[in-house]
Image 1 (cartoon, rainbow, N blue to C red):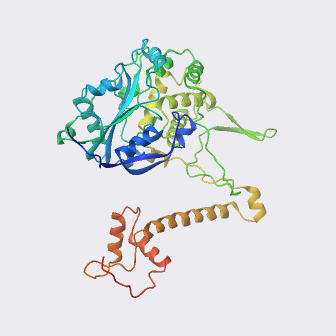
Image 2 (cartoon, one colour):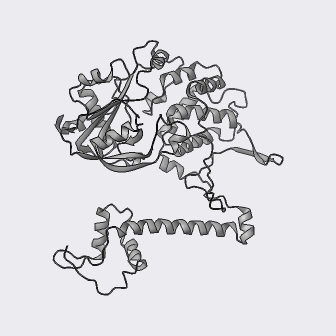
Image 3 (tube, rainbow, N blue to C red):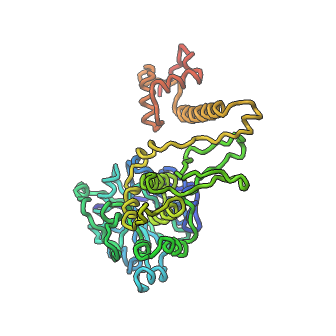
Length: 465
């Protein structure tokens, strides 16, 4: 690779809207919101050292596009950060220690020694940015292989990283140009130079290896395979990582200022077998899905919903939560009393969930968009359907006004081309699209002109730009 020092370099990075003093956990993770920003290396260093999370590109895999940084996670290294970087041919632009750096207890638990204690991250700024998820991985593989890096833990372009408040951080202001040959890296059968593979104590195929999904933690996998009862694994998991994050609880948050009970757009219902109504406690009673009631399909759909609701959840969390749901809402035995959900079946199911196309799969699942208050309808003498239509109309109006405000930033009816010619509506649409206004069409622009009162003007004042 070729580099130059450039203190004026700027690149795009998605930065969380909030910072964290400690590594976010549980429900905190699902609430993290990212905004794309243009940053220089000093700004990015400041965000990281103040506890802000970051992601090199869009969080949705389908939206991954240009990436100006390659992020490399180094876990369980036996070499401390500065010595590790000192041995690299290509020094990173930014490198810093993570909060778990120097954790001897974790090293003893995983490896039985006190040597695998160093954890840090390396960021490489590019003036030859990657343009999609495949190129990002090829660049990652190229950098890690040509520098002979060890203990690296690959994350796709859309995976985020936690900041590290008060960490040891260095900024070299190096900016790299990738040679064209980096795109020749073959990703099939590519092996990471990472931590040792877990011992397999059962005859099964680990989906984290065969199906190319996110890797299960070695200790988690070993504990799962070694457990006699699934309940024992859940007890161990909660002891190691804390109480359940309740990923499978529906995140219904009623708007305190709206008695109609508007439900957020990301509200989904996990399939449960409804048995009846508990009049005394005023709660629904749920039973267990039995043999012959499409249990495998239902728990698969549940896994998809968990991923949809919690895009940052780890594969370890998903294994724990899926297992908890199985035990709560499913009879895990067939009619002949044989075990339906074996360890191998559960791991294969987990692999299928992790590989699923969330956009496609969610279209097949029907869920209510609103919970309309009966008392509100009775008091105002309106039907629930009327309230739903009212809410939908309000949402459409809000969305439209947001778009119009974006157009307002750039549109000026007085502007002309340099030669004095009028800018046509079609040309304005192209200009607005280039400015990043999403979803622009000639029909949208015409409605904008009409509702803003511009279309009534028969003569436009011309100015030379």
